[in-house]
Image 1 (cartoon, rainbow, N blue to C red):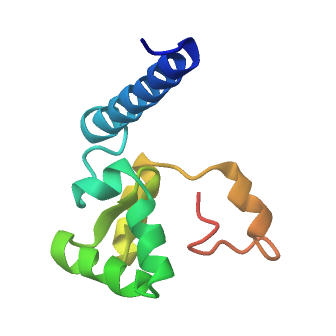
Image 2: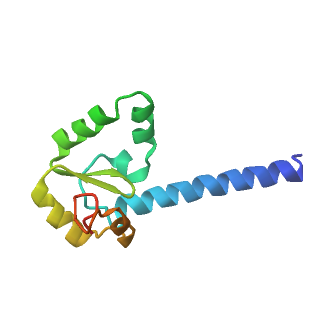
Length: 116
């Protein structure tokens, strides 16, 4: 018979797995960025980006996603990338940036990085 700590540990591990699956399902099917094109794994986790960064292939991996999915892509659960200047208007009108980025404006000049 298993001891209480072992059963409690299994219950916590099972609950953690169930939570991770529920979050992944939400991001894929119901999240606010669900319609932004990109591979399924970018919608679920940032892990692919971290692995490619460690392998010194981050830029190549991101470029490959742009080639396959177009000028606006989802790079992570909360990340959108775009290479088309006109896409900036579309992306930021639908998914505004946090006002926090205003602190990076130099002499009030707006750049792509500071555009809300």
